[in-house]
Image 1 (cartoon, each protein chain N blue to C red):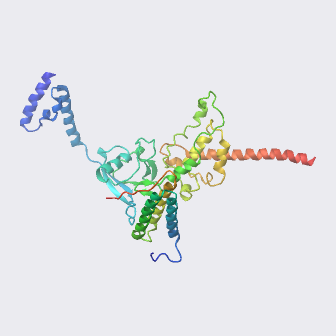
Image 2 (cartoon, each protein chain N blue to C red; image 1 turned 180 degrees about the vertical axis):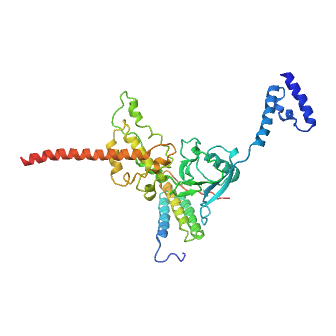
Image 3 (cartoon, helix red, strand yellow; image 1 turned 60 degrees about the vertical axis):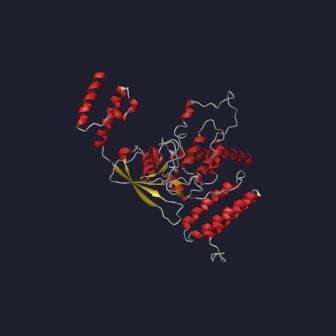
Length: 89
Length: 314
């Protein structure tokens, strides 16, 4: 893991981690195949953002958190089955 | 008729010698054999040339807020666009459509009905919150028009803002008819014209969010304070004669002091409403109704406790 995972996590980091945990918990309620799909997409997205986005860019991180919370709410509803992703050309 | 077209053809032949007239008949092969239509088409062509010579370009500058979430490190900025007003519709939405169609197709904004009934295109134009389809473009070309999204809202992209909190607050006031009674003839809940008149000025709200996003009290407490639009709709259901659970509605609204009583009568909402409604007045009436209910309750309690005291004394 990166050097930021020290003994003290900042409030923003805690929010990001709790969002990630929320996604994994939501994935548990879906079928096995969908669960793997969701986990792979979510972890790839979080990994990419953690590498690309500057730690101090609070505005953008908060924007991503808000967007992620909305997507999580949609995923948690029992009517949604799984996630999918299309690549931007 | 035939004679005039014969003369016209003769004139055209002569004029063609001087190279002035184009072969107008060739322009309208579909109108062969329809002399009247050909004449009117030629007249239209001529007038169009005249108009084009006389009309001057009227260039107006628009400075529009831009922010792209796909570029994380970019900061929002105002981008300048120049629009020829002589070739554009009268409203700000027409200018935005023209910019998106011709100049910059990455400009993002919400729009739907273009007639001021859906409330999608709400934005801040020249400092005031209105719907873009009802706001005429200011013809003064010396000053730019500044267009920004609704204030104090999270921006999704350019002029598109996140209104989920606003819609959830509207949902929380339960905007539907609540009755226990059965309709008189078994079909519809009747209402006298006088009672229906009470709803005028309340039901026309299009939920554009202009008033709510202009209220400073809402800016500082968006999660707690319901905002003028939701409160206007709450009053619409409270003063509807067909709705029976008025007390319950008022009580739900005034349980904690933050849903209704954060209003400080700033009156920005009434000033900015694009449909000319009066949310401040509705909120004031609701507060009055609540105080009336409170005093009635106290009076009833006083009456019953007063009679108890007399009994205890004797």
